Length: 102
Image 1: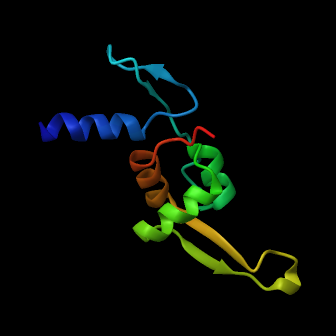
Image 2: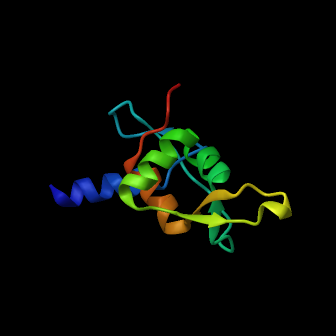
């Protein structure tokens, strides 16, 4: 039982953008593709890759202790607080959080 669940989670985590139908269950699994050299992702990139809206992304990240907040100098013209995520955070988000439908 655990083997099937782990396999399903891995398959689910490895599919976005190029959707395909899974074996007879009628659910659509998606594949997330990123450059191997990219180690840090902004909240906008994560929202775009995962299909999770920024508000839900922030709430889920806070509750699961994912990502971190980078405090940029306001004089540099950037926002004062920006969420950043690692590749591991991205994989957890894709596996555990469904795409937003709104």
